[in-house]
Length: 324
Image 1: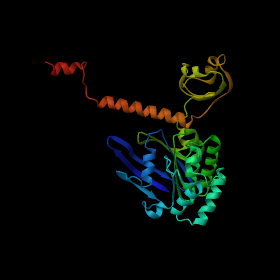
Image 2: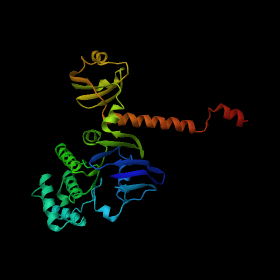
Image 3: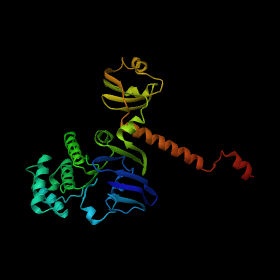
């Protein structure tokens, strides 16, 4: 288990991580979710002892970070850190040896993983010759090759095409089944919704929502309809019955006003798009996050306005009392 309590980090005027607490249990995938700049990577760097927190505690199965724990971590950073002139196989074996694997074991495991990621036969190619997606595969292999107890993945699907994203999903599921503690950081809500057991949604360095995926979705049920269609559905977000819309080219997730039913909505749609499916659904993590972040930001603006002292040319009391 990875346990984080009241983690805090500030850079100059930026409060990157603000009193974050969470626990990633053994045998589960814990999703650390949020937009770019939310504080996910800073949190992960503190967990890996790359940067030190200003305050708070980080424990691995009840113990603080140490060199012994370092060897039990498989870490995939968001930024690529491979030696571009080195060859693929020698790169993987080099990092495996740093994790105390023998050369023979490292080579055998490396060849197995290269085969799994459809890179067999490319062992002698240089890293710089690979596409971004294939470089990402090499970094994933490096994170997995020593069979770590703790797997910390920062945007692991970055650069991967849909086929390889499915391969990654299968591999992460296998790691969970093997009893590993997995911390999975991403801004791709759809992937997290399919993969994670529990999640924490982070915005501006704060946890704004947490729980199991089902708990989060059940707690934000609302009046949501999913429509699959053909044609130009851009008008859907402008309908008076619709409060908010998450749109794609051939489907829309619509958050309706509380008193609106599907039957109320249909007459405004049937002459403008061809509907293949329409159903009431629980909202997606993506729509929940967008809605939650918007609500938090509105509340912060309201509180900031209340704290701001009255000033300016239209403050009549100020002019009556101090402008004589």
